[in-house]
Image (cartoon, helix red, strand yellow):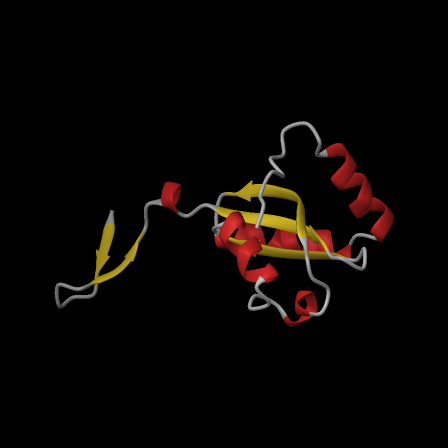
Length: 109
């Protein structure tokens, strides 16, 4: 379904199924963890490793995807990202360890 702007132009595609967002956690070369959101985990990893995605990871290359999970929309992805960022490191590591079943971490640069 598309919304029109009154002049025949399309404002936005409201089909929710095409609005897949992912929350991801990277492990940096210094062992630190970075959490972010994207619509394309593999592409985002490539941009991180190219030094163009984040100031934080730029000086901690290379990075690897340790975890990712799908969220239904941008808003939910942002909320989940904030929740993960608020976790103490020990709980983040627990999340990474528990994700071994069902989380595809085979992205490479």
